[in-house]
Length: 542
Image 1 (cartoon, rainbow, N blue to C red):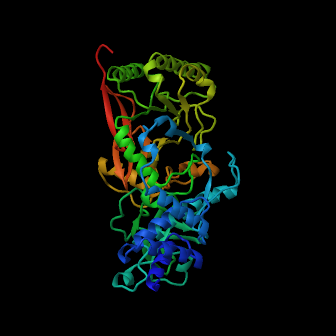
Image 2 (cartoon, one colour):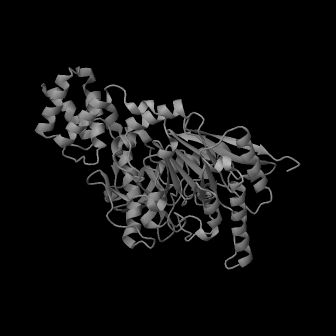
Image 3 (cartoon, helix red, strand yellow):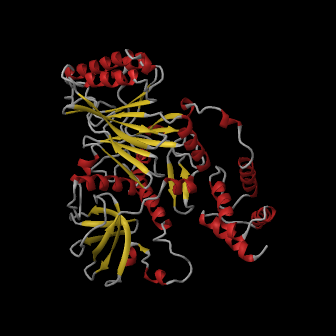
């Protein structure tokens, strides 16, 4: 086999951080020769094999010949005649999972091995000083590896005119002794002991000066978020910023093509090929299947139960039964005073009334799953993120009367046939705007919604803030990650409803259920991977 073909094979596997021994290289060359692969199709053919190899649980950095042979045989089988499973109708029940934050396995990112490693330590609520450092370090390394893989930061190895003008990422320690030079840094925005805004990375920090910045890139910049900052280092040890932006977001397909073999949710990993097959079958066999999302279901509001009855009646009359109905808190319109027995009793009575209402619709309870997500004002066993499910003492009647009821953490994940939907109930817009630092954009409502979505997805985290602003259980910080990017994210917020798709991820906010003269909620259709706002008007007789 000619040397140029060998170089292409080695280059493709090196892209996935794998090296080839003589046996593996010879095996791949034999495959190419056996199938008479042309030179123009060589790279794409090897790329397919390399992707599938990378998804295997026992894949190692030095390519294993046994694993490689198994991958080739599997690819041969998948390209054969149609399987028997295609003739069976897709059963939604067997592919639907509700995953609490405290059930997700913990994966640490290893920059040395450039992959994720499963933690052997059982996470605890208390956490340790090391776990708090590790949580931030994981965020930094996960985002940094996507930045370095981005085409704007990984130039071609061949000399070119564009390569000469590209800025490589530098560390804060590389600034020392080099005033007057221009640098591109990546780190976390934070305040030092004197209260001045700095950029901090693993090697140190540098004070930022925004006086020379004309216009930042799109997004919201808060203390605790990671940013790419370009500027000049001065004699005074200050970094004069000329440009600042969020790290580029990596699509779900790209991330899963590299880490598809890792089971981040603990429910079994699927390949991209399987996901594509699921998507095709859902569109063909389950085009009407949908999920309902309701936020701020104030059970103490006089109109809430009327709105629910109207929604349920419409579902029954039109034979439109959702597969999942997600009820997000707050389940009370006002906080419950600590130790006030009357308010606590009323809180429980409202859940009992909801159980009676749901039980009166057997057409729904027979096939619909009901998922409850607590809000900031609801009673759970902890107040830090992620929050545990509603206390069981308030939900006993719901468990007894509703067969398919689930009580999720906040956030919670729904896994359905290769799709991942993240549900998060938090007043994200208010909290993010309250903690803006450095530059504060003067933008309209639509841009503000887009900026919020872009910031959260670019940061690959539901709460890109410091721990003193948004306390997080450090050993469960991985439950707030958005990497790989989910299929959809529900940012249930008291802010007005919206629907935005960014980098292939659909993000929407159902808004408060009771509002003015209507009831609002959102529907999500897995076949289209899009949501739709639904409005029910309040009739005078109601």
